[in-house]
Length: 299
Ligand SMILES: [Zn+2]
Image (cartoon, rainbow, N blue to C red):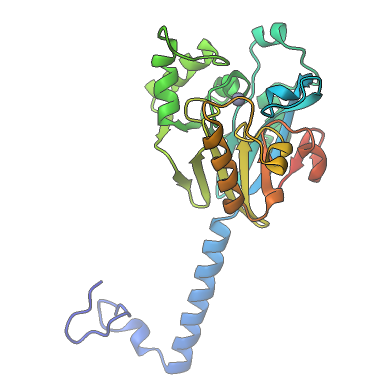
């Protein structure tokens, strides 16, 4: 409100001219202090969430050279297949949805599989997933999207546009993209559940999405305000802790420099380096406290 003649700038009087203005000095200060404390407490709480990593499968003996650029080709690792759950402020936001369609079990050796919706149910019980953030459209991150039919789905606009169009033209690139998953994204769009994120964007108080260094056409990662500081869910924009520790790009990116810049930026966003969570590192499951089998709490 702009102060007019006769009004004090900065304090908005009540329409009747009574209210705060008539409170005696001490009482008025007390009310103002109480209001301020309430406001600060409310806004702090409103921007904090719980964050969990949920492992729904393990793929054994994965070549590290497929994860870390120029790694020794003989190195192998049992990679964790994970989704991440953000809880708070009336939202249950799932970051990525894993896979479950039968064709993937023919192509890969998969151990300790729990269907992603059942893995998430270990934490949510009867609650529903309100939102799904897809960090990218790869099969092992987006295939389970139709297991959460009530969720609002958030994906980068350029990722959606490319994989529903040009990627399937003669010079297009769609390695790791499952046609069924693309159809599900289109279906979500047709019923108004799909949100196209245009670059870096805050989608809820304390939850931000950032473009992620071209792991796919326009991959993204997520930052979340928590009681321990800002958590960064890097997903495949940083496959393993080793990427960050050795400052090495991921093996699968359209642009290595862009990927390194994204990893560098994550360090400036995260409350501390330990709160940057890689997409497939099995160590995530041992570095944080276990909640139930296959679930750890990050924040
Ligand atoms: Zn990927």
